[in-house]
Image 1 (tube, helix red, strand yellow):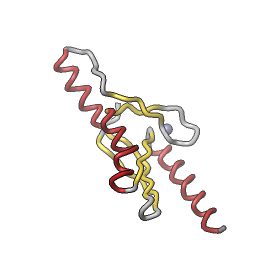
Image 2 (cartoon, protein in one colour):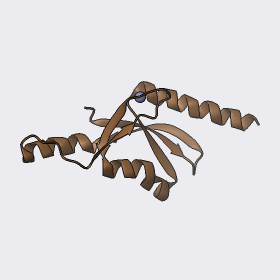
Image 3 (cartoon, protein in one colour):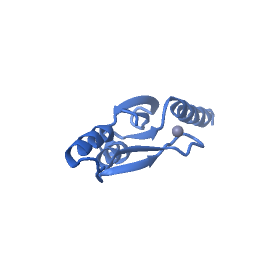
Length: 107
Ligand SMILES: [Zn+2]
């Protein structure tokens, strides 16, 4: 599994969308858990759908991190991080946001 999480940051405060990368804590947790429990993977992990348009991949992350990216950042920084499965979905999602805000600006 990937050690990083690709994400598209929707920054409502600065009216911007951009790409960002996050460390995937789930990968680390799985390694630690496997070592400590002799193989069984623990709970506390969540599968989050990729937000890339038309993509049906999921991203494994800790429930804590899922909450941070999708909810806590919103409360703290007025930002939401939409996770994607990789670079190509990030680009599609960014394009979608940019096209729609360009269309909104014209009206
Ligand atoms: Zn994807």
